[in-house]
Image (cartoon, rainbow, N blue to C red; front, side, top):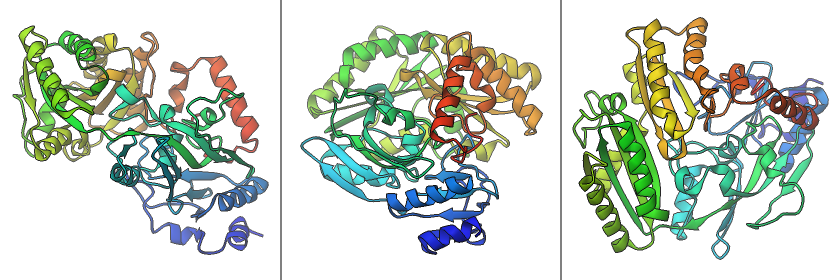
Amino acid sequence: MDIVQQLLAALGPDCVRTAEQASQRMASNWVNAQNLQCRALLLPQTTQEVSTALQICHAAKQAIVPHGGLTNVVGGVQTQPHEIALSLERMNTIEAIDVDNQTATVQAGVGLQQLQIQLNAAGLFFPLDLGAKGSCMIGGNISTNAGGLQALRFGVTRNLVLGLEVVLADGTIISSMNHLLKNNAGYDLKHLFIGSEGTLGIVTRAVLKLEALPLSRNTAYLALNSFAQACDFLNFAKKTLGHTLTTYELLWQDYYRLMTSPPARHAPPLPQDHAYYVLLETAGYHPENDQRLFQETLEKAFEIGLIADACLAQSQQELDWFWGIREQVDFIFSVHQPVFLFDVSLPISTMETYTEEIRQGLRAVWPEVFLYVFGHMGDGNLHLFVSCGQNDRATRHQVEEIVFGPLTAIGGSITAEHGVGLEKKEWLHLSRNPAEIALMRQLKSTLDPHGILNPGKIF
């Protein structure tokens, strides 16, 4: 019996969509997405249905590609016509919110923004925050170890997951739904699957660590005249603002100018002639004290020459304005085509020399190249958008060589939060040594001996 017919017989037409039906859906929520091409699309509603599907696919050695909110930008959810797509979008129940122990138990298809809204109503807060929160799902966040805008204070997804339920390639259900902050009994298996990009198992449920909903939020744009000021003020802010410091986003002048000039949607809150800009934000539980500390910190920094100018958000409208400049990166694609995007991780002290080196490297080949740089400086993560007017494979490889090449010498990584997927696997050796890669392959072979889970990704 054909594999699709087997799945239909076991799971029913409500769960299984044919290739023709699946082709009516978008393959990605990213730029220039095509329609989905796959052998079938599975839409299970329970962990047991996921298990049944994987048992059938494992026996037939049928490749299966897990889909989340389809906001992956490195080809991690790209599906070939002979592969089966699996989306957990119907497993979208928030099963429990434990106020006393500050945990949430959720299915993998729960949307990040959906979860945040429901938690806020209960006076709780899930710290993961990223631009795609309106469409991304918790399962995808876990599978890619998403970082985001508040990692400086709360860490990445790995720091926010207490327990997981995962279905292995052969359909075995591993239920490790731990609710404890401390559990040192043997191997912590959840870490095998967090950040594995769906290549070792399908995350179906999770226990998440929560925080009390902050009662204050203070936000400002700062102008700086040098990278040294950016470093010095970051250290100053850590000392003076302490645990309230949540976000330290650094914008290079080219990016700030692009995002605050027509036809962009936002005016500049500060003049465009400074070398760098910082979007600074704190969150706390003592509104009056937090606001006073925030303002005093900026005043003192200005007095001692750490910042050149500042503009504080005084309303929700101004807050949306400030964050729009940082987050609405899709505007770049309306100005330039094609665009190559990168997210790299590197020591803060090397950021200035690294970006200048790749800028010179790019200009040596394409004198009219556009390079836009911004990112989560506080946790060592930069995003780079490169447009050189060409989009063929040789050009992409050359751009990647210029961007990735210098990272090894400075102890950087080819990816900070987007993952490897298809696009970066050629460069994995720059960030992982042969012994590490060999062990990764051994884990893959052990947990997925037929190589059916998201094949071709990472390796």
